[in-house]
Structures are given as structure tokens and as C-alpha cells.
Image 1 (cartoon, rainbow, N blue to C red):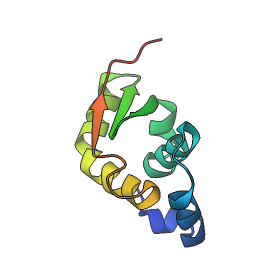
Image 2: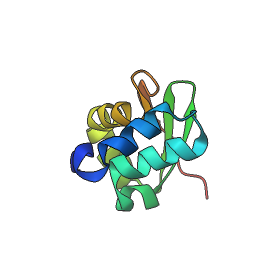
Image 3: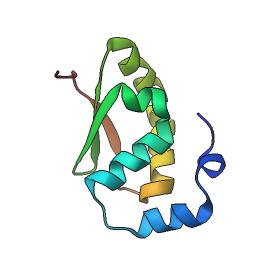
Image 4: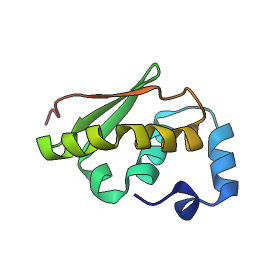
Length: 94
């Protein structure tokens, strides 16, 4: 994963951070933070301050679990501090 500053210009980060919290905003932040491969293999939704991630397979779940601290830090830079405090992995339903 590349640093957020390399992916999203500072002006866009500020606009995103100040926009109202929505499903679209959370989805955009997720795509930006994890990249296209993980984004295509997951579904996400915010429940309170927990980001619920449904990975398509066990290997994707392992990758997300290993990177969860980094993912949360990067989400903070886009969504604000304490918007996402933890990540919960749930079985993907087709």
C-alpha cells in the first residue's frame, strides 16, 4: 500500500474529511486506502465506529487482518479521527 499523500491530493483529502459521513464516502475512502484488488474482493459498511468488512475469501481476510492497524490509520487521514476505531471481518455472503 502506498502512502495516502501519494494517492490523494491534499485538497481532496480536506474536502473528503469535511463532507458528511455517508456510505459513498466510506466506500471511496476504503477504495483509496486498500487499492483496487482488495476493494474488488470485499464489501464494507460502517456500523457505529466499526468498519465491517466482508472479504470474498480466507486469504483476503488474512491480508486485511494483518494490515488492519495501517488501514485504520489511513482511514483516519481521510475520514477523521475516531470515525473508524476497529475493523470487524465477517463471512462474505453471496
